[in-house]
Length: 278
Image (cartoon, rainbow, N blue to C red; front, side):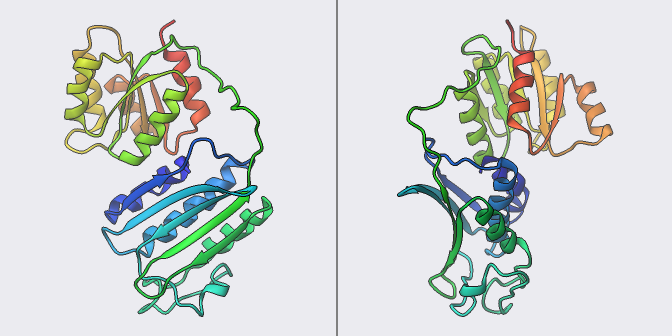
């Protein structure tokens, strides 16, 4: 779900949507991570596309008997009752003036149903009518565990201080929680001025920076951090800008590593472990 949020964040930001997440950590499924990212990214894209600007989207998860139910809800135009039974069929369209104002729902929801069923689950849709939003629920078999499995630990000193800077608040929060579970002491800022003030007090040993930041981009922020920190600071760029010119600019700005979005979390953990002080 974190990766799906990262993939769809540009559309959410473009339409000024407010996203809320309620996903308890103890819930788990056994599934192909890439395919599940496709499922939830399709549902989030659908919600973002068909909800009016400054609308609200939420993702909730809970255990229902032996399954985990994940629901993506929006407060958009809703879905007509006659459309609901076939909403997951390929190329189903709602009337542009009533349901899902921008027209065809295309193959996205058909893919959601197909991938969910391949994992032994179900996909369903609900709406309370025109103007009252829609809810799409994916229900999958719960992963049965007796105790919480030990998480792999990177080769870092306990409590290594990491500064995470990203203007996508929800994506930053999720990533920060994952990094804390891997032994990092994480501080989060959402723009460059806040990051500089925080760095003076927090004294990070690693900074994980988005490039497309407001006010001051990540390249300029990296240069300022390099000059302000009294001890060597390792810099990692995590960004949607990934061509050769962007990578070259990262090197010129002093970044040690340039990672493209959506970042593979296992790869990120490995990179951070290699950069961390022993």
